Length: 234
Image (cartoon, rainbow, N blue to C red; front, side, top):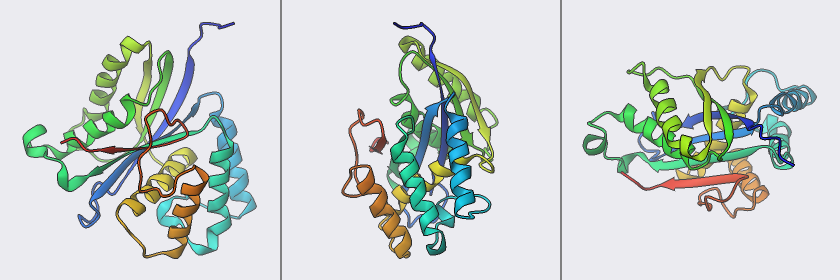
């Protein structure tokens, strides 16, 4: 029997390689979602893992190192065992994006259009969403409110609602840090990086755990646990 009460879902977003060395052609925008009522439990589990492995401070892709092997592999285990956690990312070749033609030369506008593409096809009907983006300095102050508005207008027909969409700092936000870890791994493989054996091993373990031969692949839109979308628009 349904209660008619919509599910509230938190979505934690981050991006990787969108402003880095152009030799890394592929940028990644991604997010982890979980039910709002479950969020506190997930965060508590992350804190317990950090305490167990004495992993102080922030964690993420750039901080992945051999001496923290067991801690980072435990985060994969946490993600895969928790049915309420889902990941999705969009991979795009920055060198193939024609901002001059399609975004009036505004790369920042093009970037937020990609954010929209990553989110809009993933968000489920009849849910209320609380979306948190890792803060970054924008040239235009209205980017976050514009993204919220276009998502809101698109999702109204599905009965979904954007309760909030706001920037936050990743510090003390474990689910944004976990997003950073996963999109960093996806970007590492798509850009054919091989500088760190630990990172190579992490990518291979993550891929195998979520049922992929490699993170340099795509998944069907219907894949809810670990979804990789290769955006090939312009």
